[in-house]
Amino acid sequence: MSKLFSLLTIASIAIASVSAQAPTSNLVDGACVTNYDASIDYFPQKLNTADDKGTFFSVSYHNNYKIVENNKSGRTYVLVQCGTPAPTGLTNVTEIYTIPVSKVAAMETTAVPYLELLGVAESIKVIADGSLISSPCFQTHLASGEVTNLSANNKTLQAEQVASVQAQFGINPYEPISNATVSTGQTYEPDVLGRASWISYYAAFYNYENMANEVSKKMVDNYQRLTTAASGYATKPIVAWTTFDAPSQYNNNTATYILSNASYKVGLTKDAGGIMLNSTKTKYGSAAELLEAISSVDVLIDETFIGSDLTDFLKNYEIASGQESKYKFLENKRVYREDGILTASGGYDWFEAPVAMADALLEDMINAVNPTAPSTSYKRNWLRNILLEEPIKYTTAENCTWVESSPRPNLATTYEGGAFNAAVSGASALSGSLIGAFVVSLASLAYLA
Image (tube, rainbow, N blue to C red; front, side):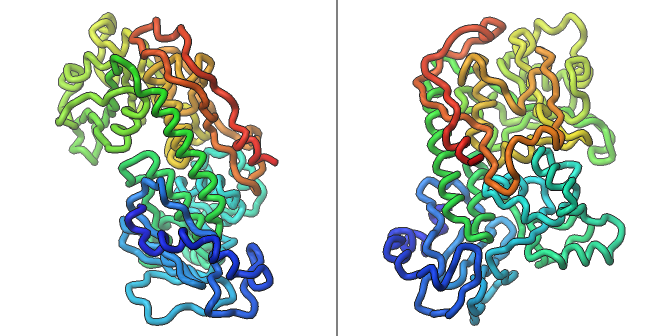
């Protein structure tokens, strides 16, 4: 994203002098401008993109408005500071919004954790399907009655709900309307840190650039320390991400076996100290064909939705009893699923919090690659080992541990140690020690203050 911020670069360098140009008498935090002066820069705090990995959006600043471009959807949004005039003469503008927003709709579950990290989740007044949101504190917000589920069948009510908010993040699943939404794109990013960087995209609508900068810097710094600690293994475990796609109308009623080579998974695996299975083939017509390709894999991440335990896994992949020794990942007891945290209705937190919390996701992956790291006591959040019969954690409002009106603590802890011990294959990897220390992030705890 850095290369897309040509105007932002100049503005960031001049931030100190710009701050002096916006007196608090003209712009109080969260309030509209009074006594508008065209010469004043009303956005003294701008996004810091020095270490940004995002590729699909950009934000540029002008005295009283911002231009937000979603380069994935091709949409451009003009965000005008409340109390100031909208610009004229701009072309190819999708929508104009008055900011800061205070009432929004979240049509896609992935938007919620970003707004929680910013501390503005209570601005969500309409949600497409609250039962799929795994955040326990958002479930509390949902139970309060201050946020409603989008009507699926009553179009009149649905239109009223959409009209009641200032911005709609994501596409209405029941009535997609062109140019009536703030399009998203974080899950298309080819890099884990790039996905997390979308906190800046959302922050621009709230004038919360400072918060986004703070969260992003801590996350990037921690991610880099973890990556460095996991980079020195003499032998890097081989990892494969696979899916059993059961017969359905979408695949001509023919089972398909998929070996993923998604860019962000390749990068995440590498950053965790592993190496992705080197294969140019991604689709297989039979379980036997896939199993032949992955037989020597040390760590397997099963992304199949159908089946949640080892019995289901063996059935899906057609592995007969007594054949376990043929596959290294089974001998190593290293088969993981992404369903470690679910809602009661089956909503995956995997598609929510870890998308926004890159360093927390990396910690889970580090532990999947090397069970002694990042600490011997580390407990994974999302990657669940079915060979060790690890249970699914179901979230409810009773699990809420922070205040939804304040920034949500990142699930990551801050790593302050040295290199991890070499990753070891097999059951022996479940014991051992590491060099370094793992301490609770004081910054995360400070969010609760």
